[in-house]
Image (cartoon, rainbow, N blue to C red; front, side, top):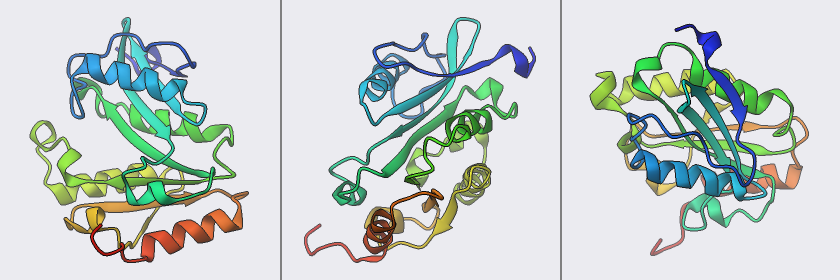
Length: 196
């Protein structure tokens, strides 16, 4: 099948995605992940972009506020957005669907007033199916995220620093609030409080 037969769209609030392909299981079982995607789309600050083919969801990318239990959840700004997950069915990898999902997300300028960041954790990498090493997978993600303007940034965050194959990347939108940008950079470089 051609790339053209795959439709990319934003999942509207209140709508469930088409059934997820059975191999979309890196983060959780496909049925559970479908529910998580619907939950994110219902959040006024959440965005879900899906790739659909043959009446199935074959890929997705999520954007949402940082979780309160994360370092980044301590950010007070409404203009901080996390790329939560990007996953493509293994049989379609190489068709640039992840890139198309991200380009759709950033293409209309919706994140131009925000800091959008991604935390990349080796324990989420699909190493078994790709055959890549953790560092090769990290390079693959860095290349993908650079295409929409994210750049790697050093951080004092303990979870990111837990493994050398982890990384933090971010894109500061051209219209981002300077206070939000300062807060983001201060938090990423500040050591966590004792007992964190």
